[in-house]
Amino acid sequence: MNKQSAPAQKWSTLLLWAILFGLLLAACGPATPQTNDDNTNETQPSETTSEESGSRVTASGLEYVEVEAGTGTQAQPGDLVTVHYTGTLEDGTEFDSSVGGDPFSFVLGQGQVIAGWDEGIALMREGGKAQLIIPPDLAYGPNDYGPIPGNSTLYFDVELVAIEAVPTPAPTPTSAPPTSVDPADYTVTDSGLQYIFLQEGDGDTPEPGEVATVHFTGWFEDGSMFSNSRVGTPIQFIVGDGQIVPGWDEMALLMQVGDVVQMVLPPELGLGEEGSPNGTIPPNATLIFEMELLSIEPPPPTPTPAPPPVSVDESDYIVTDSGLKLYVITEGTGEPIEAGDTVTLHYKLWQEDGTQLESSYDFGQPVPIIVGLEQAGAGWDEALLLLDNLSVAQFVLTPELAYGEQAANAPTEGNLIFEVEIMGLEKAETEE
Image (cartoon, rainbow, N blue to C red):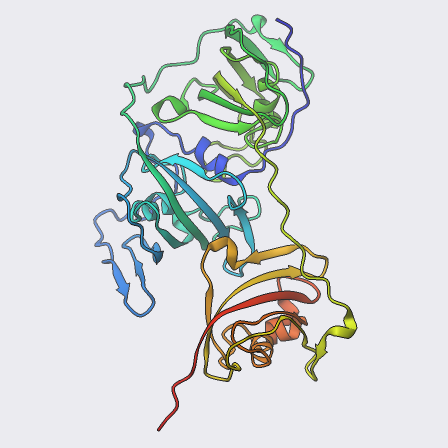
């Protein structure tokens, strides 16, 4: 069996990391930060609800906003749940999303994701949609995590697509050491990866871009176990895409389906100088993994690129004194929009270079706005007051129109392009 070496790549995907290093043994406790460690006898705050906003705040500090009630069963710890999600920071910056690709699955209540997800998804029913507002101590705490700064409150729009009961796995030893290997028996690659095949399979070898399904167990050099997928479900990752650690990508390209391998990863092929965001893996740690390659699947489909905004000639825009540029794509057939009216609309947002930043269509919910209260900014109010119900339009906002007094600190540069579709209009009540 000819097993060739391959270049190592740096990991990048956030949620796969949450799975991988959330698969801690039950005896080790959950992977996410815990609160009140030194005050376990303190009375926890009671859950509060707000009928006005439709949200509830749990004792842990999670805010749960039900967007659409599900009609299926309620998620229970131990269920395999499948969700679509979009994650944003408090300033609206999107840092991760499954929308446009495959949904994400994990076993609920086993610490495979951040604590706020385990708690929030358990409040949902199949088919439901919700927003989870997760405080830092239920997310990644004080540590920077890729594009997520330390001490960030995270906003997740989630849809619970499916729930599947998972059979209770057979008990797994919680302290079994790695297989004893004479260091002289390892094969060592140019990158520093050390590996030995404990069992050889006869299946196919993965190609870059294919999806590998594996079971694994991870230990530190002293033989203490930190992670074991066999207490839950196998892990899937795209080979060569840098989703886990460089050593995993290099090793997978040397394996065949059915292989069981032990590998020793120096820090540069593992988590390097930073360690894991939740502190499970310390900086500069050498890691030992035993990994079984269970199957290979074809590469996932390439997501369809978001369409660009409608092309508009500069001379076709209506330009107001404030600098707002407006183009009516489809004339409305309803009443004119006036101050105080509530409009329900879908929108898309792009930067000037055509990069789409967000779209309400991705969330499946139109947005209600009371016109004239600057709920979306002065530029939005000005544009909407030039439109009729059921119209479709494009408008371009300068940073000042989009962000007002915060324009100098805006999270984007240059003008913003919006396209709105007015879905409905509720006229303001007038005094008799």
